[in-house]
Image 1 (tube, rainbow, N blue to C red):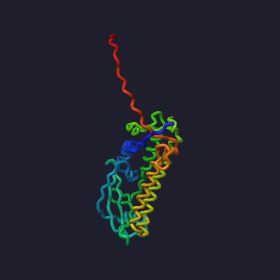
Image 2: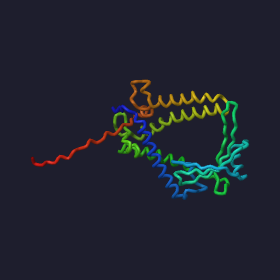
Image 3: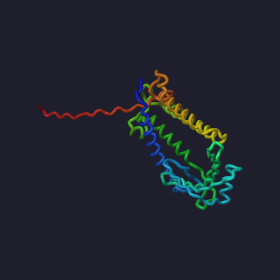
Image 4: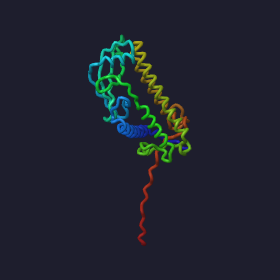
Length: 265
């Protein structure tokens, strides 16, 4: 049975970052070949490394009507045109309509919508392919992790491998379960964050709620990644690896072999 003594948290993080940047760059380049990077029918909302440049603008009646259709009954107070670029290659032009209201507790509550527009500032209805790129990234990760490599390219660079708790190659079911379990703390922390912001912004509760919410998010993350601190019998692995029956291990370096020349002496 394989029981790693370290979590390799930072190596894991760097591996995922490397994999995502490389995969998203390949996807953005492929998208650019199909659409020349600018299209009013197919777009990327912002995928991979993103730059966002915004400035004040005059809003056409058509764009304002499109914003009111997205969120009716709001008297917009601010407008800006933004150009969101992925790897400084693709263009996603939007007009952001916003309204800012200061609450009794001092917090500023903001409502906003983003209206996709063409070069003339008229609203368009593009189909965004960001979700498709993310799906391809996850699919490619599944292929690499269930292959003989047992690692994605980023993991290979970080000298990490995914194996079962018995040290064997992980099967497709185990890898899928691991992915699903890994998103549980992410969903919990996002829900906690948005729930707290809603209580502060909409119900005008005290902004001091943000402090215990941050502490609760920290507890969720630490409990998920270091459950063995609470129960010593558990292996040194995060919960998604424990539940999926997988482990992340570091590949042992190959020992150097010295060439011995027989001189006949």
